[in-house]
Amino acid sequence: MCGIVGLLLKKAALHGQLGELMVPMLIGMTDRGPDSAGMAVFTSPLPQARRKVSLYSALTDQGAGYDWQRLIDDLNDDLHLHAGVIIKANHAVITFDGAVAPVTTWIKAHAPKLHALSAGRTMDVYKDIGKPAQVAERYAFTQLTGSHLVGHTRMATESAVTPDRAHPFTAGEDFCLVHNGSLSNPNAVRRMLEPLGIRFDTDNDTEAACRFLEWRLREGDSLPTALQRGFEALDGFYTFLIGTPVELALIRDPFACKPAVVAETDDYVAIASEFRSLAHLPGVKHAHVFEPAPERVYIWKR
Amino acid sequence: MEALSFDLARDTVRQVNQRLHAGGAELSGREVRIFNPDGAHNIAVGLNAPVHVTVYGHAGYYAAGMNCHASVLIEGSASTGVAENMMSGRVHVKGFASNAAGASAHGGLLVIEGDAGLRCGISLKGGDIVVGGSVGSFSGFMAQAGRIVICGDAGDALGDSLYEAVIYVQGTIASLGADARIEPLGDADITAVRELLAAAGLNHDANHFKRVASARSLYHWNADAEQEY
Image (tube, rainbow over all chains, first blue to last red; front, side, top):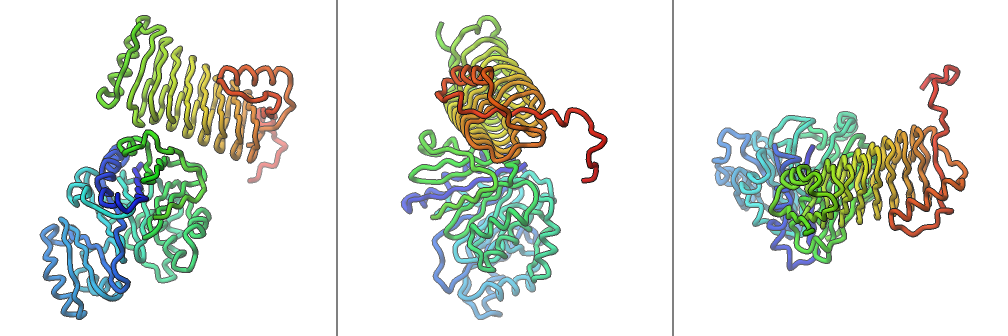
């Protein structure tokens, strides 16, 4: 079992409240996912040539006491960058001019135990083991701002309880996915993708879905087409929430084995595994509340 | 008699249910109001007295499960397993219901004014279900007794492996399940649908429904059938 939440704010004036509105949604899914939690939040994009990479240090020997400044100094010296860093507990977001690949390759070579959580221009990712309320407090989720987010509370069934196996999973740039359910063919998907040069970070089933869909988008599929292909390629039980810089998407498997409910008002689209995570939202008593149908693509744009 | 009110913003579901279970004869005919359900699970499960419960909002999993004698009205939607294994009484959902609504209900009437999710009335054992909207796939799966009236459309595999329950559908049927077939609508069927619609407070013409029942070809092992799959 797991819990998923998604929130898209339709009015720019509300973007400052994104974290505040979301935290009770995430904590409301604690019963469904008490072992880990995570969040991908979509902020205003960086300028065209700038990129950011979210990193996680708790798997290193120094843990939360990681010397980020030294890493940045070395990175800047070696790659002739002017990268900056913002630190939150054991997470750091590094921002720089230029492409992502040289930076992540350098980090992998010089600090192999650092885990790269995400890369891109708009998306920040935070995830860790612990109860949702603890994770929310560790990374000050109430202070998050932005247009939309996807979040997850995990009760692991398919792979170990570790920070890198928590959701959201990311692939490429500014693409993320959270999953309630379990896939039955993740290894087949993986065997199809790996010969194409697509690398996996974990043995988690959800990562296969995330990398499959991001690969389809990179191959030129629109998001609806990629998700439609997902129905063919991904076998198992799932409700997926998918985030891109401009979209929040949802699909459920044909048997609707895993729950989802949507509440929509003039101000927001809010999604959760169960209504109890939506009950606190302003105006929800008059919201259009519905259960998304199985095997249908739902996409909301910011 | 004054209504008994609970507020789930303050009271726990366990407190509410224990109060309703302990009430016995004292609760007979009593109005019970439950405010701020906010999707909580197990609201008003296991009731065993002729009380009238109104839930003002959206209910979570298994609302009014195992209901006996009580009449439960849910003003909002109901999540998975509403009125599962109901024995008697009535459960009425004003909004939509999620998967497995009325699963294995032995008696009573479940009314869903909106749509019902997948597997509505799965393994129905004698209860009646009236759905104002449409139902999802695998509804009526292995239903043994009772009736399901669907005013909208039905999803795939309707009535798969059906026993003696009968399903009436006004709209389209995406596909019938194994051993389910459409049969002529007789006078007794029209009367039954009319009565169930009236009981549900829904206004449709009973003549416009199709009758889906078991072809009974799965009842007995057929040694001559192709056994390779």
